[in-house]
Length: 244
Image (tube, rainbow, N blue to C red; front, side):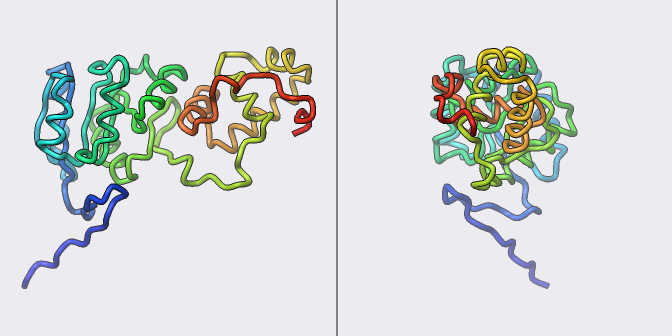
């Protein structure tokens, strides 16, 4: 009997997304050769992934992507201090999904916000175990490169795709998020805004609910990814908006 051809669908960048029975090609750019070999071993054991190449030089990442055109690129964040490489790779049509590998110490609101500004959408902790590593790589790719790994988040999330108009933050809630992003406690925010601590707690709960956040660090990270936190985020609210 003739085999049935696998169905495929187009991704946002026009590439063909293969079925769940097809292995996705993976290449790696990492300065840690031993870690890279460990990742290769994990990929080789996965029926969903196929290893096609690796380099240890950040200057050759774009060349590697253009030559191999992988479905997934695992990029060591240490190869790119200023963010220019991440910006270039994430905007390249040669690579469908870029997963930036970071250390646990880098999963702070400040660093996550910086990675988001560079264009990194998928962040993966280098300390994740072998089984979870393969699962995360496949999940991130299947979710269209729109997931992020954040502290306290067991599974990838797509906050933008599920946002409804009723879930938009009010001006006051956005300002509360801004205060949280600079490390203020609820009591400090209450004092700065001349409101009660209970009022602040209520706003914080609304921020968590609307963003789908689990804690303050997660809320700040999601705020950066959705461009809700900027230079004006923690400025005092105009008097007429205080009731919002």
